[in-house]
Length: 324
Image 1 (cartoon, rainbow, N blue to C red):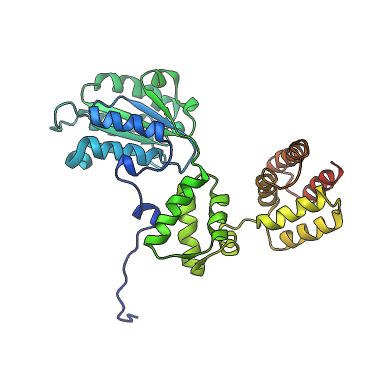
Image 2 (cartoon, rainbow, N blue to C red):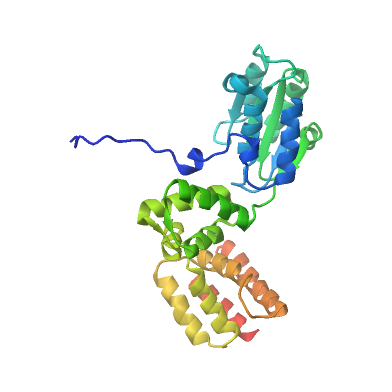
């Protein structure tokens, strides 16, 4: 039934605020400077950009392509993602076909093939690319974006310039979140922004998505709402558990707080992951104690990942931390 209201399709903020110029990219200044020099000279090499998810690898390649190709960007760029089938057939057909296509470009410019999540390409497909890269080197350049460059075969690595992206600093993520919050007129408090940064761990894409989800779900960005949206245990509760163990040696109090988290439905992996994050910044303990605590968490984390995901593992972990 129509209510007569007009429905407007809103872009996800992560797309709405995606940079289109290299100067707008946040973080990794040294690497981005190298890309700016490439854009200025116009001679792009084949390249591999590696780093963690959500820190701007693919966006950087698109920005570079925009600056190099200008109005020819759409017809002279081919992007293939991990979601596409990228076996040998795709290399032989799609990629080769695009490389063979005649497109009139300004002097010194090349067609660009962007292979996102390149480390999930089959070794056979990577081998098939070797010859294609050499045959069409006069007209086409390849850009591989991947999380681990070691999963790209050696012959391809030797044909490419390798750029590495580091995790974004908390201040860089915060600055971008504040910009978006201002443009979208988001209501927030400082605890809410801290929670977004804590949960994103240097991943800009996740930080922006969590910001939008919290605004859509609750209208106000504070720490409680953010942790509900990302479905992680509140770090203050985890911090209280650790302080009860390390400082007060009060295992009963720690178990009460653990029970409150367990009854809310958090899994063992949620709790142990958050415990590790909080242990790195827990206040007023000496570094040796901190290292011993992290070591215990590491052992339990390993057991949980191997499949022993039980409440008893968590109880044992906190009991051992009490003994430190």
